[in-house]
Amino acid sequence: DADVTQTPRNRITKTGKRIMLECSQTKGHDRMYWYRQDPGLGLRLIYYSFDVKDINKGEISDGYSVSRQAQAKFSLSLESAIPNQTALYFCATSHRWGDTDTQYFGPGTRLTVL
Amino acid sequence: RKEVEQDPGPFNVPEGATVAFNCTYSNSASQSFFWYRQDCRKEPKLLMSVYSSGNEDGRFTAQLNRASQYISLLIRDSKLSDSATYLCVSSFSGGYNKLIFGAGTRLAVHP
Image 1 (cartoon, each protein chain N blue to C red):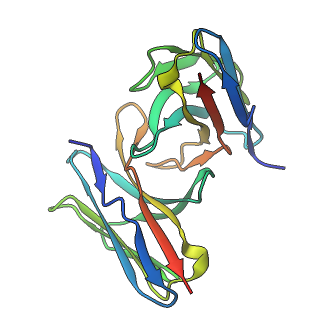
Image 2: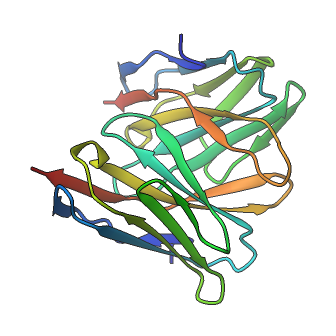
């Protein structure tokens, strides 16, 4: 079984709808992240969380919210989806080790907003 | 200007060729550097870290030049299975090790 899972894997929705993307991990990592990837752009950080009580905005958090329900679960919500939120969304986890922490990514959710 | 810039490619090379990718970063406070590999429509996976002294992992060699703010990845004896997008990543400690991703360089290895 995959260590980092995301549901759904694909979603098509309409403008104005509320959407939730879910991420679960069995790696036992304390840190979790949500990114989006658009063609021609690098992955951009939306939100990150160091533990259940620690949530932080990334560089592009407008229009998104998150919930860290447990150490293993981190959900991303689009309160009112708009077409420019069409993208590939990745969840990632990491555990601090020394000065760096390697991030492990889930398989991604392809979201299309019509 | 993007914080991490890469030539998007694609690089089309025959099997067995040697290919090199370059990457520049703009934040001189960046502390750590990585190469991630991303297959089409899949998640990025860590290929290797990049150390100041340069490091090698089999057919892959990574180099860092802090003075020029430049990172490279060399792939020797290319295989068909090396076809993927290679993401250059920098990291600096701003409360946590924030990763800055380049947009990636696409490699296509043909028979």
